[in-house]
Length: 138
Image 1 (cartoon, rainbow, N blue to C red):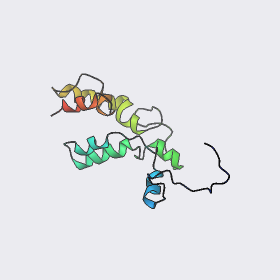
Image 2 (cartoon, rainbow, N blue to C red; image 1 turned 135 degrees about the horizontal axis):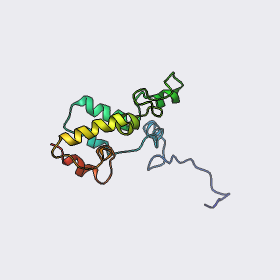
Image 3 (tube, helix red, strand yellow; image 1 turned 60 degrees about the vertical axis):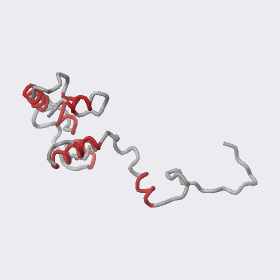
Image 4 (cartoon, rainbow, N blue to C red; image 1 turned 120 degrees about the horizontal axis):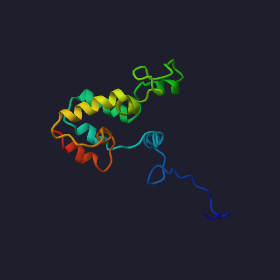
């Protein structure tokens, strides 16, 4: 970048293509980086009840009122996860890494003849194998 003393300064809004401010672009900019952009459309296209889709969406956005989120907000909370006496409850721990959750997922995977033989983590992380993993279920 080179400064040119004889050229007047201009303001450019970097969140739009044309460089002009809009309230819409400011609204979108405030959420940039606030959550990982998983393939959310997979959640909404799933053949399940809307309450399950909504729960998965809230879980992915890390908005469940788990103790880690309560602590972040300064609200009263338990110091450990009551079910397994493990670490501070989080959405990840609640649904995947808690020994009780792992047992539930293992039971579900064993009960389904078309279930993948991989970790239940593959059902939730939207990586290379997720689409294949989800297609194996009826």
